[in-house]
Length: 236
Image 1 (tube, rainbow, N blue to C red):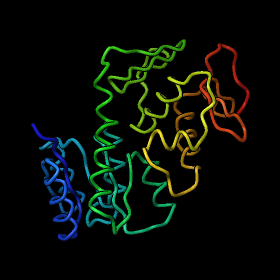
Image 2 (cartoon, rainbow, N blue to C red):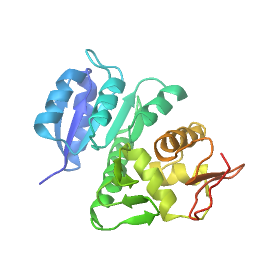
Image 3 (cartoon, helix red, strand yellow):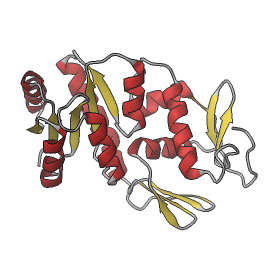
């Protein structure tokens, strides 16, 4: 069965361009013209990935992305934006999008981004029973689930991937540039504060006191590392 991709854009030319190029690569495409229609299509057709324009009538792309993540959806999202402002890119990634693409874009770049997102998403299926334990924190890579103190912790897909990357490199310092390259698969064209934003949100959910993190330690001027010892880190 081919991978099903939902294309959400109110510009007919963009829908045709995206759908044509994805179909050439063997993907099955479906379309929606606004956020409300997209929500209905998502519930009915269960796409494997969503190509989502930011500027939509009825419900915009940011609002739809927030709604999906709030409802627990882990469907990968590639956001399209006509704006080349960093704040829009950071906001999209912050609310749970997996990647973004600025219009105008080349068909080759579109397909490459889609394949990269699907590859990272598919990696979760390779080890359904794998678990990483750090005291009261348990990470299940295959299920995209995290338990903390015996209760499930809700994370966005990018927050989960960030935590998993840190856990699998426990005790090692990872630079912001390295984290960006590993999580997005290409050089980020903004500054590295997108990592700081995701670390901040992750700490709010993970740490008892984000100001004095126990798990995620800042190594100033370098990056971050996952704390493996029981000794509490006092670095912010």
